[in-house]
Length: 613
Image (cartoon, rainbow, N blue to C red):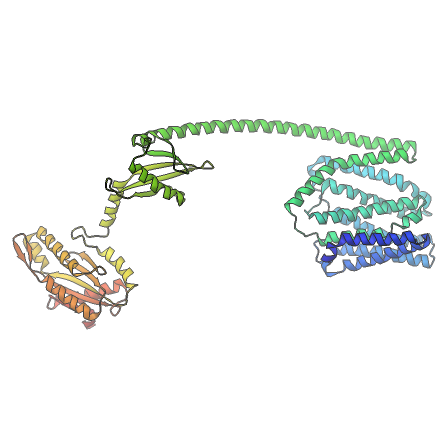
């Protein structure tokens, strides 16, 4: 089905050329018979297409269209049978024409359900346009069709049937005009819209011309229009199948331009066509005056409403323009005030403020920067080094954060420094405002405070917090190790006898001796008081040798001031991973072993595994 739709225009062209070539070559009576057979065959093929799977998947109520196509096929079939059997009864002919009426009724309802009638509530001029179009269509219908029906029909029933069918034809023609005035409920692709327009136009105009010729004594000419009816149904099937195609932006804009142009011109075009028709074709003088009078009255009314609408839009546009000018003036004054405030802030800001471009060319400086020598060219080596580091920061585009700490390395002439740097980008101007604040002393103080949080202030050894954090990281990267928990025996007696100053010096000397025995990969810390921690990456045998060495070193006397002092260590050892796999477990086991040594012979070491639990 989709492939048929894609080749619909070449198919239609071939169909028209072949059909009307045959009708032109054949004698008139044979041509009329062939025209009827082509209409019957075409309507049957259209009905089969409407029952296909692809058509049933379309987004519109396909059942009603399928019933309409079948009704038209049934009408063709019954009329051919009636001619063959010479059914000439008037009421029977009315019955035979009933499927055509059903077909056209369903098509009119289907077409009007596609219109977006909500626009009539929003745009009052569309109501007048529609009324004008309907009036013009009815006048044209009366001139071409309605006035001939009484003389052509034989009974009142036949006259009513023909009048109703002619009215449906005029309403169908009206839909074609309303399509431009109101548009569709749903946006459709350009191909879909063209299918709908062609299907409506062919059906409406074929009906109109067919009955105009028939009622004006040209039945043979009317018969040649029968092959056009299946074409209108084919385009409507194309509309149904392509109804859900996506609508591109280009197609939407094109349809809007077409609707805008035709919506305002359609009424005037129809009026001109109507006046030309009633001028050159004979109608009664009374009808001529009535038709011209009523149409001009409608157009004058429309123009009056259009004038009032344009006047209202002009007032609204003028008020909007005035309001917009007031807003622009207000915003301009506010921008000028903000510019003055920023200029004042720039000049009075106590820190260095530089205005630079993307090439790091200094465009302006504030008084604080001028006092620091930033306005002197060439710049000093110190300032050039700062610009160099600033360039690296700009190239990395790391100025989305409020501020950055810019490190300026030391040279022979200048020590290292730290600048708190704030970069403010000026949008779409390729320039920046840079605020520089020397925070070297604050940074050094912060580093010192951070160091104090991880070190013992007396011995300068790492404290327990630092030791545990580093031990946690170390344990994840090694296979074996040992934690030594060291407590000094006799330290309290020295502290009480010689005073805290001597005790502090002894602790400092102890820390120095322990550090001298460890390597880079080992950890040494003061736990507090006279307790120390050492972690070494060694096996059990190597740990035993190291613990014996610690005993030996700490048993050497301490010469403090004029005193010769002695202390001994009690050492508890926990092996990793045998005695524990975490820093907390190792500390607990080493503390237990140290306590056991201290309660027995002191001045010794013990492995945690030796304790009977």
